[in-house]
Image 1 (cartoon, rainbow, N blue to C red):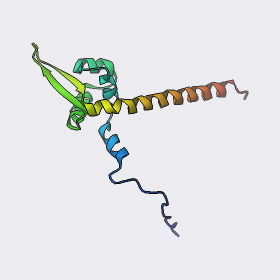
Image 2 (image 1 turned 180 degrees about the horizontal axis):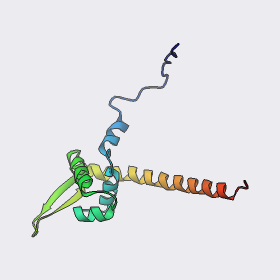
Image 3 (image 1 turned 30 degrees about the vertical axis):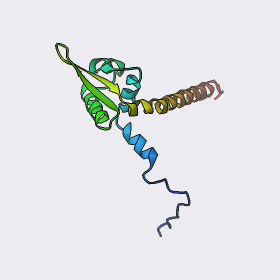
Image 4 (image 1 turned 30 degrees about the horizontal axis):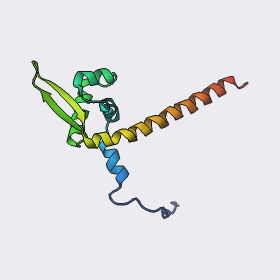
Length: 126
């Protein structure tokens, strides 16, 4: 006999949900890392590769294109020889930095709590 589905008594999120809209801006592997790296100013593609070592060139290129389409990043071609490209946060992208900063702070606290728990587990007698 199947279980009866209970009604959700929580208030539904406002339409459209602002959290969902914000998360859609930073969605995708490495997108938050790209925004984080650009928070101090414009960076070239090769500099971003150095800033985020595990990311592949293909994924970084795709993520930068997506962030540009979403209005988070601007792409500027420099008149150098050979031509180079710089990426920079837009005003919208800069608004995301405090949110990412808060996430990083929580991450540091979680890491400290977990490492404290591991230390306590190791020192307990068997």
